[in-house]
Image (cartoon, rainbow, N blue to C red; front, side, top):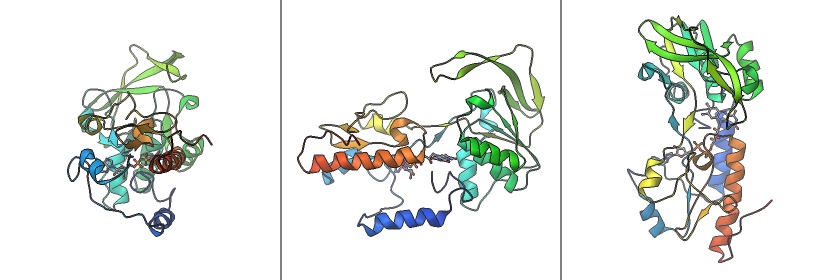
Length: 273
Ligand SMILES: Cc1cc2nc3c(=O)[nH]c(=O)nc-3n(C[C@H](O)[C@H](O)[C@H](O)COP(=O)(O)OP(=O)(O)OC[C@H]3O[C@@H](n4cnc5c(N)ncnc54)[C@H](O)[C@@H]3O)c2cc1C
């Protein structure tokens, strides 16, 4: 995600390359183009290695959950195409549905590709937005318009039909729940609709290989990230669900401490610091 999700204007790729080179210089070997489930299995890795660390991230784009959702462009696919130098022709009127970092990055990338009218549609209010506030301000400064308390209900050749929302009681996330306002539907013409309402963990492979999963991702001990005696550890977005890079890096470092304990024959207690 650091290479193909976060755009280069926010995370320069030479900075990322320098970080990766530092790991390479420490002696790590990288085998690129190897897909779990296609080129190797977890069972096979376990036979060849003393410890296996699973960090597959949250790479599956969530759909809009409305009629015609298949006509929307998944946000991370759009960003990947921009990062690969193969952007999609968007047209002038772009609607981005979502309120997180992916939505802001899609909206700003659309502006930079020349779209004239870029609107972000978010179903709650500014206070509930899950993205970094600096990103919202930067997007608005670049000309992105954000419409709050709006959710999609249908995507068809007539355009994107949305319903206005109001805020009800807090939900499990602690944020106030969006409640639809009956009779408030309106339709807007869009040349492209980008779905950026979140990414989830593809749990099918872990499940197929016998790993326990949770509603968010792969199950792991909170302190050691371990699934013993199976000798696999996993962390990052693949366990937490889509989150922040700094927490994925922290989790990687803490997992390394647990792997070290395991390979040293010590009790695996994790690193509390
Ligand atoms: C658009 C966008 C903007 C973001 N902005 C920010 C931000 O501003 N600040 C911030 O802190 N965080 C941001 N994040 C979140 C951050 O990118 C993630 O939290 C972080 O990258 C998670 O790291 P990870 O290693 O757990 O997973 P990932 O970075 O997703 O890495 C998972 C890796 O596993 C590989 N993989 C997946 N499945 C398989 C398989 N079957 N076989 C082999 N390999 C596989 C993937 O190719 C990938 O290389 C953003 C994310 C997105 C999408």
